[in-house]
Image (cartoon, rainbow, N blue to C red; front, side, top):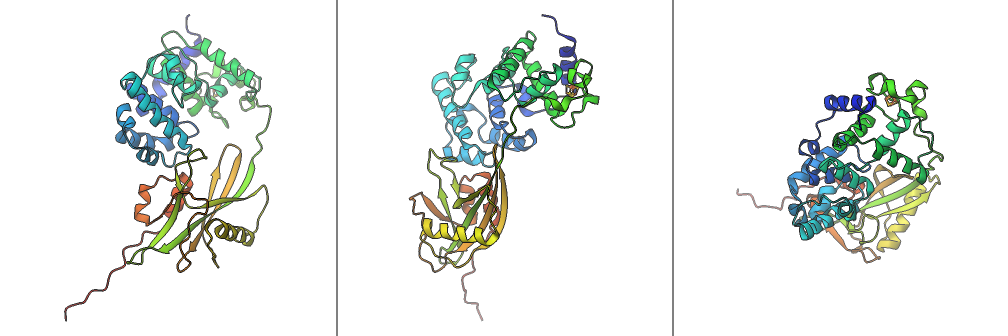
Length: 377
Ligand code: SF4
């Protein structure tokens, strides 16, 4: 199959304009795999420091396999979706056990690995092994739908299959690695969702959406996503925990099997869905939860800040309050979750979700209180 003119233009553009990303240097399967999992719902600029740190901490599949889970989760802290870190860890162990630590080449075997779906398997097979396997992410949907003016709504599963089939048919022989990355790179750097840089695009003269002057009409979607607004509250419960009088803070561990299972957090609750609450009502509801879940009466909450959390279908505002427990007994989660009283210096030992890592950062480090000494006269 000879290359179509647009494929040649795209590959030429990619050769000159691709970003020098670390996993592109050697296209090692371990690096491609980790990068693909980290890039799920995270921008390249955000994940790059995580990727570099991960490779320093776990330079090989074997190193990852033998690291304790707590260290793996800590290295993932801030990227969200912690099941992905757990899957990387479990899969590394399986690769060591069943493949002697070498990433398998066979596509069906790659697909059978935990945490690797059709997209990631296609990325690893094509980028690391140059196998002609399609990958279709948001960038590829956008570029192909515009290039060919495909009006089929992409939120209908059978229509998405059209794109998978088209992309598979378009991969030029022996160029899967470059072609797949080039399509995604064009979507990331030029063919943006809003204000695509058509003037700079190597595909401009081939692009039907550009000819029709309506690139932003693609890709077509049938339904608009409805976003639910959530109001939530988290509390930083403190007490003086040792003879030096330094405050300790209560953190609890989410049970395995729940969302973010195994991670540590400051206690938090969802208070309302799609309902406005005034500040006094938010405080009142939070105090009620502190009493019911920790058996702790408190006469005041100190507002520490607010954190916005955006999920696929939720926009959440998390109100953070400080609650001193001094002289109010020994509060503990009534639900029986593991918990600990921790000084800020020790927070680094506890893997938190990104919101709770932000809460930890709101708490100032407190130097040990100097014990009284007798000065010589
Ligand atoms: Fe996208 Fe514009 Fe290029 Fe078409 S010409 S592929 S719409 S950037």
